[in-house]
Image (cartoon, rainbow, N blue to C red; front, side, top):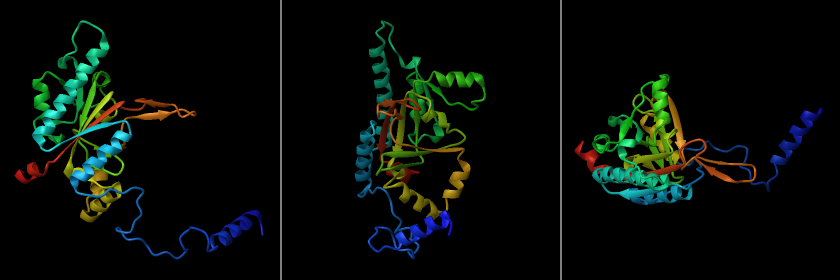
Length: 258
C-alpha cells in the first residue's frame, strides 16, 4: 500500500465512525423543498421587506419602505436631492450644487420599475446617462463623471439584504458598479425570502435558463462595496458604490392595472 492509498483508507475508516456529525453515506436525494439554505426569512411581503432592510442596514446600507409606485417615485427624487445637498455641504464653496450639475447613470426608462421616474428627473434638470456602447471613449469618459446610479432589480433576497441584477440591452451593469452612490428600486413582487426560493421559482416556471442566457452579466450585491486588509481594517467604496440606498415599494396595484 502506497502513501496515497493509506491516506484514503484512513479517511474512509474515519468517515464510518458513528459518532461523527456527517450524513450517512447512503443519503436520499433532497427535493427542492428539503434543500438546505444558509439563511431563512418568513412572513408576508412587508415582513420580508422589513427583514431586507434590517439586513441591508447591517451591511452599512440604508432603506425606506413606501406603499405605492407614486410614493416610490417621490422617494427616489427626494433621495437624489438629499445627495445633492449633502455634496454641496461638503464642498465648502459659494457656488451651489444643483441637479443640473449631476450626471445620473440609469437603466433605460422602460426598464426602471417606477413609471415616470426618468421623466421627472429630467424635468428637475438631472442629466441622465444611459450608455449604449462603452467601447466609445466619449461614453466611457462621461460614465466616469456620474454622481449616482439608479437601477431596478431582477430579484431581491430578504434573508441577506442582497439584490440580483442581470445586465442586457438598456440595463447597463455599470449603473450599479461605477457611481459613488447607488439607488436601487425594489418592487415587492421581486422580493423573495432567500436566493434558494428564487431559484426554485425560476426552475418551476422554466425561466432560469432563459434569464441566464439573455443576461450579459449577473451580479449579486449585498450593500456597499467593502474591502478589508489583513488586519481587518474595513474600507468602503473601493470596488463599487460606497453608498447604497434601497427603496422598497408595493407594486401589486400597478400590476393589477396592467
